[in-house]
Length: 102
Image (cartoon, rainbow, N blue to C red):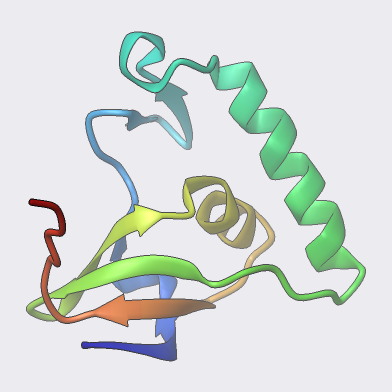
């Protein structure tokens, strides 16, 4: 099941094997991600500009794990919200992993 809601950024785990925290910033595992840290930072700046204009961005995708949320899609949108000082972010929340295929 999936639903849409606003979630506290303080309960969101955004770092994984692709993106990891480095002080107050982050680094990207280029071998896994395929893009550089600078590429991601440029994207985050663009999203921050959109947010500063009062516009909305597409909700992120998360899975609920206990009292926390694990980010599945939307790293740049999440970082842009954090860096812009937001406390909430709109998300599509899954209550379990859904595996499809044959």
